[in-house]
Length: 584
Image (cartoon, rainbow, N blue to C red; front, side, top):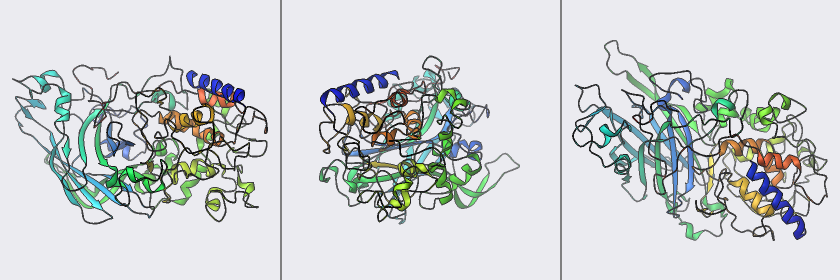
C-alpha cells in the first residue's frame, strides 16, 4: 500500500513501539504437563515421543541446512540412576520431501543400542566405564529405495551427570569438559551426501510458559510467566546437510534463480516407530519386540497436535503421515478452537490472557474470519481471485471454503506452505486492494497436502548478530517490509531480515508459540492487507489499536533459558544434574 513518507514513518514508529511492548521424568513423575506430551498414548511412551523439529540454513555454513529432531521430553538433569536416553527397538526417522510428489525423497533412519560396560556398579559412570552406554546406526534411503548405512556404531554422548563423572581422570571419564565430550561424538557420514551428525542429550531449546498456556490459556506477563522447559534436557538428532544433497536436482544454493526460488523448497517431518508386538518377560530380562514397525509419533509444524488437533483425534494424528492425512482434520485448521477465545462475540471474554488477540470479523467492512463464517468465500462465486492463488482454476477451490474462513491462511501455512503469488504478498504496493500483487516475502509452497515444516533453502540467513534479527521470524519480516524505508520503498523482491524464520523453516531462536497465536489472531491476513475491523477501508493508516495489540502480544517467555552454540550442532550442552538439583 503506497503512502506518503510521513505516513510510512508513522506506521514504522507505531509498529516498532508495539513490538517493543511486547516434564515428563520417566523415572519419577507422570503428573507434570507439557506441550511435548501432546497425545494420550505417546504421553506414556516418552522414549518415542517427538518433542520439536527444526530446519534452518546453517548460520555459520550457509551452503548447508541443519535439521534437528528432538525426542524424550522434560528430562530432569538429575534423574538418575537410570538417566533418560534414546530407546532400543525404535526407529527414529527424519523425512525430506523435495519435489512435490507425495512420498519421501530422502529418509534418515536412526536406531540405538545399549550396553553395560560394568554391571557390578549402580553408577552410570565409574572408573572410565559407562553403563547404559548408547551407540547408534544411521541409515539413508533415497526415493524410497533400500537403506544404506552412513554411520556405524556412532557414539551417543552420556548424560551430563556431574563433574566427577565427566571430568575426573581417576574416577570418571576424564573429559576436559562436557562440551569437548559432546563435540567428540560428532560424526561425518559415509557416502557422497556430506552429512555431519550429532546424536545425544542437549538443553531443550523450546521455551514456553506451560503452566499458563494449559491453564485454559492464561498466558502471563513477563514478570509472572515461567518457562516450563527451564533447565530441562532433551535428546537431539542433528544433521547438517549440504543444500545440494537436499535440493531435488542436486543443485547448490549458488544456482538458485533468486532468493525465493521454488525449486529449493523442502518439506521436513520426523517420526518414531515401534514394533507392533511387545512381550514382557517374567524373569526380569528385556521384553521381546516383534512384528512390523508402527508409527507412534510424528511432528512437522510445531504445536499442531498440541494446540490444533482435539484430544479425541490426537492419537490418530500421530499414526498418519503428511502423505495420507485425514481430510476431516482440515477443519481444525479452518475453524481453529483457539479462534473461539480470540473473538469477543464468542468466548474471548473468558480468556483474559488472550485479550490482546482478536480476529477480523469485518475486515475492510466486507470479510468475516470468525469461526464458521465465510472469510473470502464470497469472491469464489465470481472467481474474484482470478490471476491469483485464489483463482478457481488454480487453488481457489481448496483455499476458499464456505463456513471455513481460515482455509485461506492457516490451512496453507500448515498444509501446503505459502506461494509467492497474490494475494500472499505484503500489502506494500497493493494500493489498498488485498488481492493485488504486492511485495514478495515468502515462498515455501510445496504441493504435498500435509503437515510438514517447509523451508525455502534459497532464502539468505539472517546473521544472529544482525541488529534486526528477531525471534518473531516471518512476522518481523512482514513488519519491516511494511514499515521500514529500507524495505518498503517499492514492491520489488528483496531480502528482508528474518525471511529465513518460522514458518519458513524454524530456527532454534524462533518464538513459535507467540507466532502461531498471532497467526490464529489474523496477523498474516493483516500483512497482506486484510486489516483489522477498527481500520476503515481507504483510510490513511491501518495501524489501529487491534493491530498494535496483536503485534505487542507476549506469552511472557520469549527466549530460551540459555544460549545456543555458534557451530554445529547448535543446541547447547545438556544441563548438569549435579549443578541443577531442583530442575527449576
